[in-house]
Image (cartoon, rainbow, N blue to C red; front, side):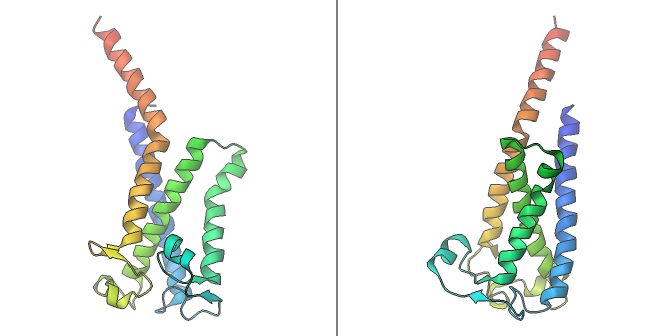
Length: 175
């Protein structure tokens, strides 16, 4: 596989994740409407708990989100069960992809939702995102950095072996 093919593979993965995020954002807009974070849904909610501050950005845990996050985790792992094969590299790629999926899906929920749009994507109109940094929810930055690290790590072996092969090829051509 050439370096161009590896880069194309990464771009194709990110485009596919963005398409998944788009479709799921549209589904969630239909489910939640103008009441984000399952505010108007008939589901249980835990509003305050110290673990929510650590792992959930201070947001409420809802039955809807507990099930939907679990469902998407399983969906992203479906190829493992279809192929019958797993590796550390694949698991890291899946987790990085899942982080990008949630980042893209959440942002598109605001952009595509007629009740919000970019103009209302600010802390005063989005109370469930409690922590913001550089005009974005802090979770976006965490998921972006972790997602980049995980995806980069998952492609490192392919990339490095190709770089080594190309280096060897150039060395042999120069002899």
